[in-house]
Image (cartoon, rainbow, N blue to C red):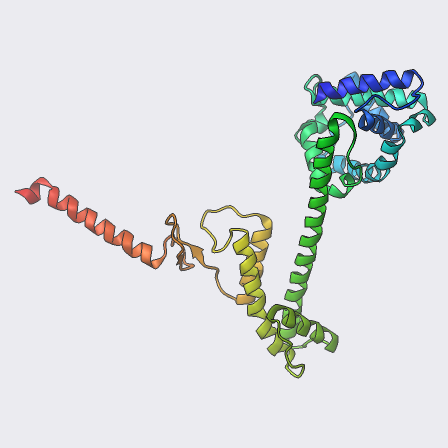
Length: 326
């Protein structure tokens, strides 16, 4: 990938030095846009890259948080301007030629680092190198990568795939955010309704709406807020159980790994039910659950079978011993 980027950069630079007339070389539209984006960055960015390219150490290693604090606004801005640059590669003639040439130097240096032909600078090494930085950046702000769209030439399939993947990621994030917001709001409504000071009429109507959504039934409005909350609690807990099942996190497994989201759902379920969650039986293939007590790994049925098997094994050993035979 690094060598291909270097080759594309050389083809584009040759096209630029000959006046940038006509279309750029086929398949290099993304490189043209990248060079133009680099050319518009602030001067301090150029100076930092100049030190990297020259092999000089920066004054002090940059903490990863500072790297991302700088990179995220730049990525958001470039994500918005990239489509116009891709559509008008000839606009490179309108930029300062000196800055364009410096941008080519940066672009080629990044390609060499990506290809392993240059040492990774310390600030980037601190966050796992250039590839780790790019992966984290893409995962953090997918919106910045939705807009560019498919490119021509040999990169078309890759660009289309990335565009589809990023769009799906943004949609998933937004759906998850709405679901989480609704569930947190439901927890807040239940807490408020069960407190001694009660809730307002508007909030009570909101709680009634939540009850209606979860039960597909419109309860009478004369019910007290606490009574509505008592009916909503098991319904909301049941919806959380269903989601945990879909995440393969219900019943929970002792020693199993779970992400932050399943653990948060489990904490919400525990608060709603005021009970300990069931523990999945550790016997492979068993669908039973173990009581939520310390050190219990097996359901009652498997525990009894293991105990029976242990007794039979002990008797078999005892009957086969020389002393028993004598």
